[in-house]
Length: 277
Ligand SMILES: Nc1nc2c(ncn2[C@@H]2O[C@H](COP(=O)(O)OP(=O)(O)OP(=O)(O)O)[C@@H](O)[C@H]2O)c(=O)[nH]1
Ligand SMILES: [Mg+2]
Image: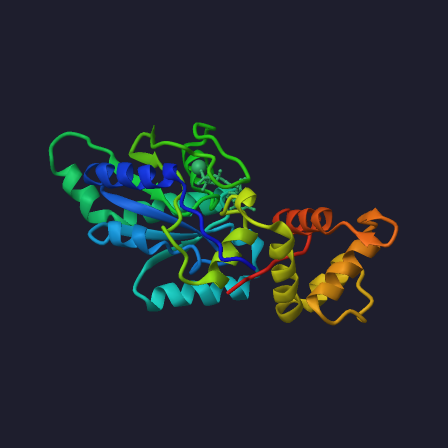
């Protein structure tokens, strides 16, 4: 498929405003999607936070198998990173995240305590679009203070959310100015971190079916009642069109409608738990 490239003006601006806010924060929570955490690593953000304490959150941990999650966690630990897995919709997980933030920022918390007056710890929440930054902030604060939505680019400006002991800065999701690794870019597209409108969804669907057919053929077969006779990704694509009745007219497949349905199934977890890396 064509190269994926997405760096709209609001992101360049968001990066600039994040850089400006950096001097006001004690540390950073970098929110990654657990299904493809390395694709979610925006090197521009990592560079920006080089001198800050960073806690990497593998969010949406409920969407992959435990063994895959453990393997990813191990990789981050080996790289010497602070890491925690999270299902932002699980209260116990959110409580663990809250304690972990204070653990990672222990020095800052102690320094604040020694000032003689109370100063909350201030944390920037950053990451590529749609990873669940705003959801995590709402979960930590116990209220719907930040806007959330299942598409890229919901948060459009920095917003401070103040809790008793901690202040969280919600930021807009940002991608790198260019994607050097197109396979990783496709993974971001699958999980809804790239605006669907800039891509050809039929090409994306074909790539997804190819990858699924290699990594999770059984899940694909089960979801779409495949006969097993289709071999190429295109044959599988057309069998899904046929099985689901996605036709423009008799004998002519509606590839577009099928692509939307398949991508929707993936994002609404109807195909099951998938680890892309
Ligand atoms: N299954 C699952 N879904 C989650 C989790 N966390 C967030 N979501 C969903 O992910 C979608 C995106 O959440 P947001 O909080 O808006 O993501 P964001 O990172 O703030 O996105 P931008 O503001 O666009 O950068 C929403 O539909 C959330 O309900 C999680 O741990 N598990
Ligand atoms: Mg947001």
